[in-house]
Length: 127
Image (cartoon, rainbow, N blue to C red):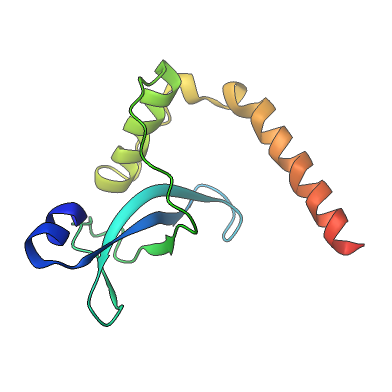
């Protein structure tokens, strides 16, 4: 959508991330960032023409500090399930069920690694 708007209306293309809160986790504790493109008017005002479902009336946008080009690649089964799940949550049924390939046992180790890295970062900042 944003590329078409840039081409037709000459509104600058802005590349970055749409940030969504995970409502299946405690409030303010878990977020998901999705690569996202939108547009800006001549005065710099951001506009997004992407249609959204009623349960997502507002989207937090964050412009990327540097441009990371989209790279074409083939999804693994887990990545394909995650992409389908995210699309379903964002644009379909917000109560959709997590695919088996994404069940808790598959993500426990990466989650523990993130918790450890976050703890270490917090300790370093406290010093």
